[in-house]
Length: 261
Length: 67
Length: 63
Image (tube, rainbow over all chains, first blue to last red; front, side, top):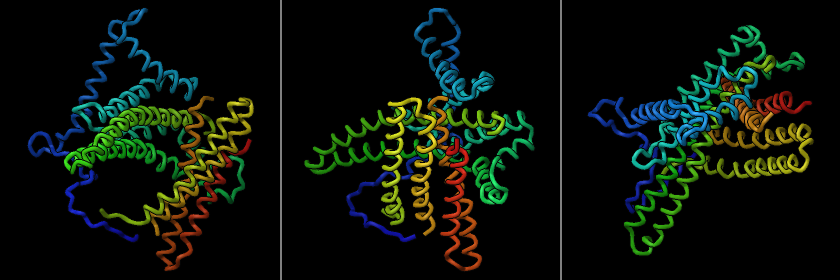
């Protein structure tokens, strides 16, 4: 690779980088007490509290809170579960629902004032979620079809001349066991990471412009306005990524359940 | 600032497939919207076109890392 | 057959293409390093892209 480098012009602006994502520990030097860990714990408490309160007094004519909880549940159950998985979808709705609400809450933390850090921009969290999804859909497939038949169904595409399997089987196996969980986690990670970096660029850049000469001060409001616009755009991306992660998990489960995938 | 020029080249080379993918799905959506029963005919064509455009983009990505 | 199906098909095509390029391109790259040549990588990449496209056609293109 050919390297290039721009000389620092000495203006003192430090562009946001990956270092901005490594937050220091909150309590002393214990590296397990960083902000993302607390955000995950907080999200679990928040989700549980919300849905317990929303479903405690279930009425035929729902209150506002119950309506909000039920519409999220109905969205996952009908829009993702029933639509994609089909006949046996009820077994997987708790899993899909947990996945969706967990990812959505942790993503939206990225734009909530004072929290302002999307947990999923640390790659280890999406890795674990993709690992769970990976285990679930392979387990479902093996349980439904038996180990040998499931693996043969993945590795050998029906209706192809024999010698082509040399070309296709490595690709199929790599897709199912490596690329699928990897792309599942990296898509979520990259979206959250890039989105947070984008907001940092606009807000920190605007802040730096504000310290400059008068001409630069006049430009600063535009940077902040862009930052605010991008915040709403980020909200859309965060919801979309939570949806896509759940949708793809449901599709993988449906593929594992189908006889010939 | 530091970086490699390969990434700039990859960024430029991704423009073409991006536009191509957009055009393929725009045509597919408007075709299905006009004639919903043509969906099963159009779907494989759209997916193959998408795969071809995407293959070029991924070629660029791999070559940006390798060269 | 909702719109989720098309979304899933798109991502799985993307997965096929990327794993085809990685597998066969990786084999080509390894052969290059081993035998000290420079054409196996290009050949591997072309082979991987071609077989991925063939796989895509098998899965989504034939009716």
